[in-house]
Structure formats: C-alpha cells, structure tokens
Image (tube, rainbow over all chains, first blue to last red; front, top):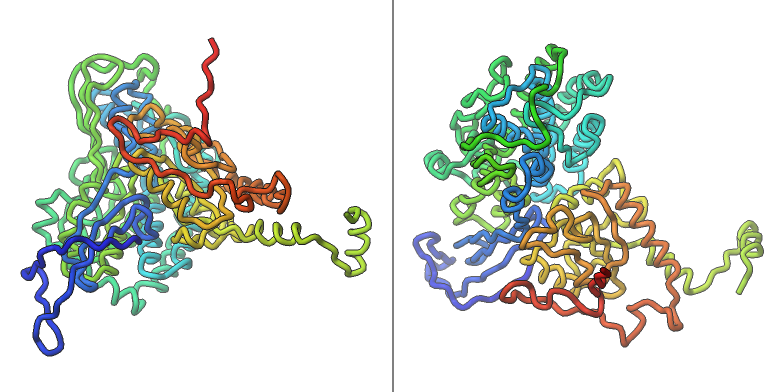
Length: 392
Length: 203
C-alpha cells in the first residue's frame, strides 16, 4: 500500500461529523491512499483510491483498466467460434458459464436448437462451476478478514475435485472452451457422471463442516454483520444482479426469470437475504450452493442419451443472418450477458459483454462510505469481482 | 576441491564437507519467497500451487509476501497491460537483490492470445530480466513447480566470485530498470534495449 499525501481535500462534514473527546473539532488532514493495483486484498489488479479521515472512508474512487485486454475488439475481428476461447478468460473462475452465455447469444442469433443431452450437460457443468466459484469466494472473503489459510485451503481442496472433473470432460482445468453453438464439443467420458454423483453426495458434508467452523464465528459476525450495507432501492436502480442483489431481498434470478436452458424442469429455491450486508452475501452464497446441489441431484438422475450437438450446426464458415441477439444467464456472479450484432459476415459487427462484476462494483463507494478502511476491504471481497471480467 | 566419492564416503561416517558457496546457494535456493502478485488467470493457478493439493511449501516457497521488500521472486502471473507495465517494473525495482523473475503463462511470455490487442505488452521480457519462462494458458500448477525447481537449480550453480557471478554480486550490473511512462501511442520506452532485442526479420 503506497501512501500519498494529497493536497488538502475539502472536508465533507455531511458524510462524517467530526467528533473528539471534549466535543471540539479536531484538526487534521485527510489522507489519500491508493490501495492497489498491487495489494493483497484487491483480488487482482484493481485499485481503490480511498480518502481517509483517520480510519474512516470519506471518498472512494475505483480505478479500473489494469487488465483491459481488448476482449471485445479482438472478438469483433475474429470469427464467432474464434471468440469462444476468449470467453474462458473473462471470468477465469467460471469459464463454463461464460461459454454458455456466449453460446446462448449465438444460438439466439442463428436460431440453433440444442439437443436434450447437451442441455443437461450444460446445466451440470454450470452448477458445478457455481459450486466451485462460491466456495472459493467465501474462502477469499475470509482471507480478507484475516483468516489466512484455513478456509481458503478447504475451499480450494473442494475446488480441485471439481476442476478434476472439468479436466476429464474438457481437457483443461480452467480454460474449458467446451460449449459450441448448438451443443457441446464432445460427449461425456465414461464414468464421468458417477464421479459427479460422488462429489455431489460428498459436498454437503464439506459444507456442514465449513458452516460449523465459520457461520457463528464471533470474528466473522463482528466483521460482516451490518458492514457494507446496500439499500434495496439502490441495488435495483444500479442494476446489481446475482447474490449481491438477492442478499438485499430482491427475488431476481435469471434462471427463474428468463427460462433459459431447461431450468424450468428442476425444483430449486432462490435464497434471499434481508439486510444486504456482507454477512447476508456470504450466507446467500452458501445457501445457493445447497440449491445447486439439489439441481445437480435432479439433473444427474435424468441425463438422456443422444447427440450432444445439433447435427445441423455448422462450426466452420459459420455466418449467421444479419440481426441482433442478447443471451444472458445467471452466472455465479450475476447476470452475464452477451450482445451480438451480425451483419451477415463471419465476424460479429458488434460484440458486447455485460459483465456482472463490473456493474456490481459500481456501487462500491456507496457501500463503503462512513466505514473503516478495513471494512472497505471486506466489502470489496463480498462483491466477488474477477478483474478479467471487470476490465475485459 | 574434494572429489564427490570421498565426500559421499565421509557423509556416511557423519562428516559433512561443503563449500561456503554450496551452503549459501542451498540456503537461498530452498527459501525463495515469491511476491504475492497476481495479474490475471495464471494467478489462480499460482494460488492453486500454494494450496494443499500441490503444496509449494515442499519447495520452501509457501511464504507469499505482499510487500516487494520481502520477496525474492516475482512470478509475473498473467497478462501485463500497458497500464500495468510501469507498476510491474516499479515493483521489481523495489525488490531487494538477489531477485528472480518467472514469466508464467503465454501472456507474460509474449502477450499470448491477447497479443494483437492494443493495450497488451508483448512479453514482460522486454522490460525485465526473466529467468524462467513457463508456457501454457494457464500453465498447470505442476508447471509452476517445475519452473521453481529449475530456478533452484539455477541458483545452486551460481558462483559467488569470478566473471560468471550473478547480477547481485556484480556492482556494475544494474539492479533497477527504467520504469516506462505513458507516451503518445505506447509506453515509453516500449522495451529495454539492454534486455530485449527484436528478432531480425530474415526474408
């Protein structure tokens, strides 16, 4: 953390009334701290310029762009299929859901049908992705609070099991590049579903021990309850999605709202928070894991046979008709959408990503004002950002 | 110089003979502390390498230091953009000697899949002296461990004196490198000519 003494900033008395022991106003300068781009708790190369009055955050300016990799521009200069590997690198924790969102957009653009078996595989892989993303995020959140090591170690132990499944299915641990327009790239390897079943059966045991260890931990409660509170109205008007929004008590899940894939066939509930603070966001993620497990158990019972890709789908020389389409899914971080405009050429005319991380990050200042700088770190951790997606 | 056979024979009798150089390099090589510095996707694999399954602690490198002042090794894990490149060089300059650099992944080596992007540095070896390159997108944790072992081997062979002595023992060798600034079209300088020379095009 590098400390920069700024020129005196006019003090904002409305935000924080200055008090001292004898009631008279203390004199002091505000301190401007640049947290990041290299900081252990900024989750990559994000930078927060915080103005501090003592320990209290008076102003917070997020600075993006340290990982701007020209994703959209590159995608506009390559074929539709050529962008599929790049979508893996958007939110590098959840490559399979990114693949799905992009494939969905192209399928809507070209009017492709997805075979039944592929829909099941998509749901299984997407929910597994949600499992590993949410467990890792809870681990990182606790690491930001100072629980160095243990919770993250446990989370990564479970994550590695799921990554082994992805590797068996797609050949890569993180950059899966598995979905194709109109289905999936290859069929399941033999015995894969049994391996998934075993992990799904074992997962609740891990969750129980994780929750027993942490949920009522005094430090966790003190550091998260009432911290980083997000008002419901602000969350809606700022376009927040995903667990962040549901922690404020808004019942909005694209899986239920948009009826994409075959989520309609499964029974699952949407956990909702009440206070919209960091603790609710943490609990919502743990509860969502349990709901994902329910979906997985139902899906694993019913995987049908058949092809995994629409035989009419054309991979080489793919040219959709001129038009536009928006495909969105409920990614682990929120609404992940791809907006495509086609002019009939092999490349998209416009390719736009709606990144949940970036939009969820826009209200960071509102959540952090008036709190201590240590709480700002925890609040950022609870937003669940991945810089590959924020900056693209 | 004691021959290897005699040394082994003595070791069996409980007499350990070594040179100061071997002892010094053994100690340095087995306690390489990396800077906890993640840039992009590869950082997750770097973290995975430090977790239980791969356990980088077996090689003495589990102590990821957030401060460059306490680190020996910079793992450039991910895409270096032109906005980030000055900070990467500045962090490297703040590390104390002896210091080493691992370029992890295709992006850090050459820009990788994002090479054609307007904002991506085409390889960190243009600005920093890279010791080990790891290919892969992202490289598996095993690859990072292999790179670490390769680095340890390199450290073990470094002579303390003589013309082949490493940079940190050579007073004339630079220990800091110029930090690029934002120019009109690109970072200035776009590369360090002492470290990187463009490959001549042969037609």
